[in-house]
Image 1 (tube, rainbow, N blue to C red):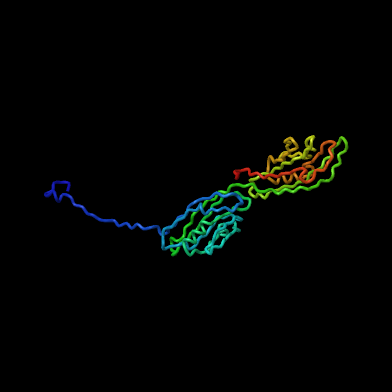
Image 2 (tube, rainbow, N blue to C red):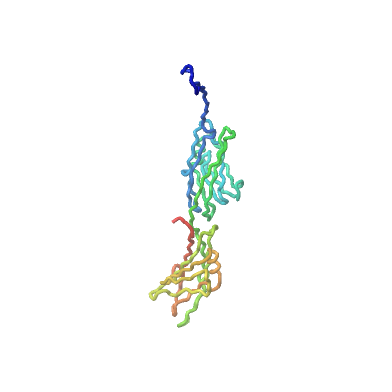
Length: 289
């Protein structure tokens, strides 16, 4: 009462009620986190990168699926029977490249599969990707399925180039005071599929007591390919613009590279004493050292 009251003990009145709150554990009780860094073209263990947990003793992982593995990429793990299992993704979309692990009879079987999991990127590709693990617990209900993302970073790795030379060349007759040239027949290619690599050549002309027994020249004018004289009989062929196909097309052209013997030189450049050719593939982006 805001006015005067007869009895101070009756000047206030109150009511009390209680709100009930029921706090329970998550019906799913499962969590998975992690990410991985793998080298290109190498089967790499990622089990240690995956952290997972679930506290329920009454539920177990009934089903595990995996999506996001690029076409041509592979996985490997230890199955429930102790045997190694493997899979290579053949599909281009999420449905086709979905992989289902065999069912698990215990938490230990699930733990073995995860801890032994290894993956390999698609051949000759350093494209990053994200794995999507789908976990189904049992008993099944509306909360039994959940997905977890696992990003994978692929470190670029230079691919082994293919080098072919025609040897021996036709005999070159050096007339006195005059040098005849011989066209070098070389082909080179790279299995690189993501356009991240460049090709180059290094050629070394043998030397004797008088120095290099000859030199290399080119009859072609090509702004995209450069023949460099590094001195001491060593030459480089590099591409200033374009990928491995540019160098391959250049070498396939007549007169691309010629060997010119030193004036009055005679001899056989054969086997290990011949003109050495080395092809190198180089990643143009971030790569493994």
